[in-house]
Image (cartoon, rainbow, N blue to C red; front, side, top):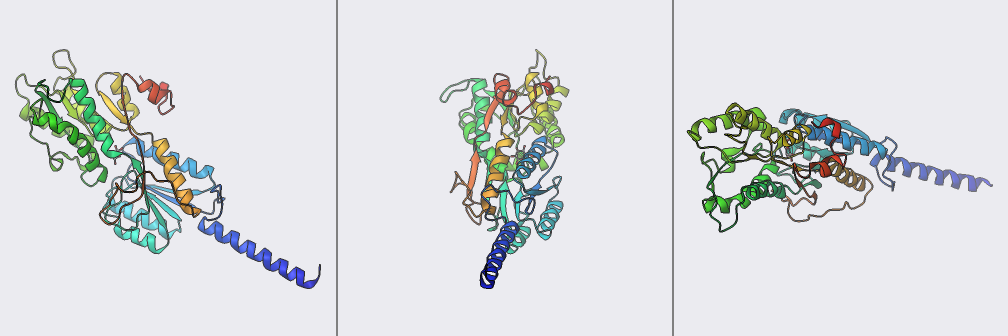
Length: 368
Ligand code: BGC
């Protein structure tokens, strides 16, 4: 090889080296998505109080690791300030992409702007990030459908038909945290389904608490819902009047409500448990479903959500267009965020084995 050839080879080698270093740093140019630990993805999740978020975090971590990414996972334990700090620290540490399950969808605007300035893409995880243009994608479940499934269950179990004259049955309504955007979806899905029966008198709400602003539960806290239920039982269920159904937005709150009901002697032949809905298919609640205390839950396979989010992240990091299935339905007040929404599934005593145990979501040995 003559001198000119060697020089050219050196230039080519250098160019290739520079290219691959750039690729490693930006996360681009590797079809398998594997970046040998050079790229870190920040995973900011709201809380460990509901076990689903622990599963979400672990599932994503595992999948990212398998693809050669590093992860930087933080839980904010329902504190907005803590989450803002965590997200900003992720950007400062050089995390290349952020996956955020917000404590409060509105409160991360400045941190998201900081991310955008640093060229860090953001995926809103499960809960839409609101009011900011710096949200790139959204991965979640169809939250309206969650509420619809809960309400449909109540209607079917009470045997209500449009135009019928059953009842009147007494129902009480509960919702999650006012600052969680999903709560609007859950509640409208439920109320669009329940309202016709409230209007035609087949359902009655003795407490008259029917508006979202009247029924939200601060930070989804089960003990607060329990106290509210106790107050409603004392104030509106005197004498022989009993509650027939409760719209409980998730499993944690359902368990709180069950405690209040049991203290009021529900769960006996004389005073059977009302129909109580739920969400998340948490092991503790599936055990309550088996025991006949909670009636149903809405199963959202967090393994699938983690897969969607990780795939989105990989695509973004390698310069590909992530797959979405909802282009128009997720307006965050500033932009319509392209989304991939999964379907939730209604689970009760009749199908929990097939859906939750056979699929490996819950271990048979963890059930009573
Ligand atoms: C999630 C639910 C969860 C609730 C409380 C919602 O945003 O979609 O699955 O039960 O937050 O953590």
